[in-house]
Image (cartoon, rainbow, N blue to C red; front, side, top):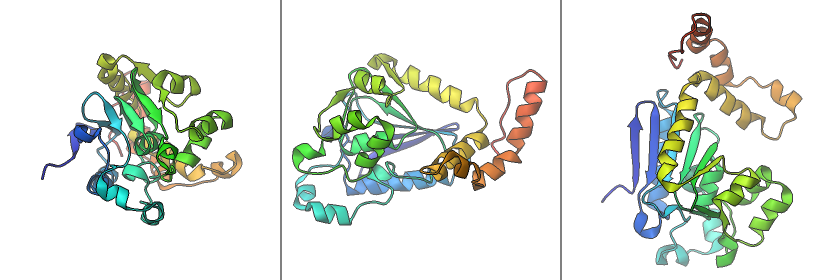
Length: 261
């Protein structure tokens, strides 16, 4: 059978594409399992310094769970009982992916697809993209982190307006809300994503891993308590070859060449 998720290593960049355009890149159980495998592979690969996740084609990033006959036969309670602890697509609630993740939103990001976007660090969207936690409109609930992630990312009234209507919002609207970093015409989407990737790669990989761990571990803590955290990536970054190279490159007035360790 054809693998319905494409994973390509492009130098230090991992590109992950949900490749099910016939169903607008909806995710079934097999696809979800494959995505979890890919995230685990990336976590174990120190040479990956940035991740770009997207959907195949020009219409959809991901429209959430595959609402096929098999999926519909499962009750809401049965779905809830079998929730992936890493969230939708293995990403929306994942706390162990220490490299920057960019959502390249090329179309619909609905339901679980929107939850995957909420699991990313940077969101770049085509101007025709639409977002929404649409589960209430089919009698379901955004159980894979959508409810709690959205109210943490947006002001209460804006988050609730989306959650309690299940409506779709444009990329421009979510950019104004602060949930999308950049909106560009579809033909400029790759160029925009590549700019973000280049800015990420200009930074020390050990520093970025430390920052992501600090953000994840410090979530919900006061700034004072978070300041006391000693995460593994932080300790490694403070005594890394990257730290030495960064200082040396600054003194020599040249771009750094990061060892990544």
